[in-house]
Length: 509
Image (cartoon, rainbow, N blue to C red; front, side, top):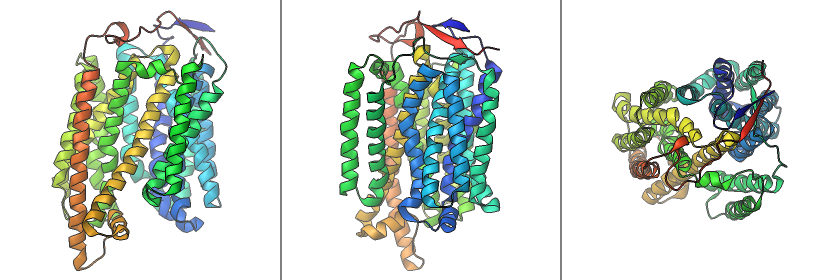
């Protein structure tokens, strides 16, 4: 048993910590892509369609976004390594149950378990790296984590498609289960770390947050399908807003909150969280919906559309490490994140060259620009955010950061899809036809070219909106990060964080 001062990390576990957490981090984005790619095979095999089938993806994302903050806070209280191992176990069990599911409802429940495990894995991974490394080593560790996330984003759909096509949709889930069952075997080499005190769990805050965010996420998921004015959608969003309001009130009065609101008031930490949100706004809509456009309006095959998207995702494999290197060479992170967001904005605006029949080479420039901005943000964002948090709250901070990111992705997907459908509907005058066109189901014959043109016009409008949002976000993040910072990266007016708190480290070898 040992201890370390709150301003200094524990004994270094450089090879062990990074080598153990990265495989788990890799599988999280791959599993999301795997379920999406496998949906046609799942629907055919389990005789499912519509909402029950889509919830195989949605329930995983919902539980992931909902549980991440709680998992991060629990890792501070009960041990980051312990929560990581628990998350791997839940993820493996959920994936195995998914592979063996005889019915769509069983699959949905299994995916919920896997989503809960994914939240534990990602939240505790960030906390482990934040407490196991410092300085340049920490920057490199988080850059490696960003690269691995990029690998999952870039090759997840391709790998999952190959597994589903060659071995069946159950094969992908079996692979995820096998990887996450093996990963915890190396966790013994990671020193355990937790906050210096183990107070009573904030049950009221936990319940209000989980139920409130789950209700909001359910409303966002169902909104595009059921209509934003449908009673269940409005009811879910309203209930979620009330419960999240209750959550804030409870946290203000709690002696040991699941989310210390002073963390949100930390200007620099909030700026890096905002940078993560703007990054999501800049790429997630294009990453998700552009393949549909390429297949529907341009007549590309699914394989060719997937290869085209590599122009956007391959830079994410390289640029995160470049971002970490530049930070370690003295380039101000504030300038790098502003440059990343402006690069995404420029690439998105450039993408308005989009038209039916466009070739991959014409898309190479804009997609590479967006992908490079993504990679730069991935490489420095989490590491810089965690610099502004004391080690005792590393899990809470990592959980909050990933919760914000997951919720932002769900919101952007819902808004981007609804915006496209609304713009197309205004052009074609039919809601049913607009949904078909937005989904890439354009009829053959003389109407195809006209409808493809209407869809293209909607895309151009949406892309300009995203580009403007990213440019404004770059300015906002740069302003929040402006000014001199003291020790630990505090900005003017920020409350000084304790530096002499002691965090227990156990399980040394």
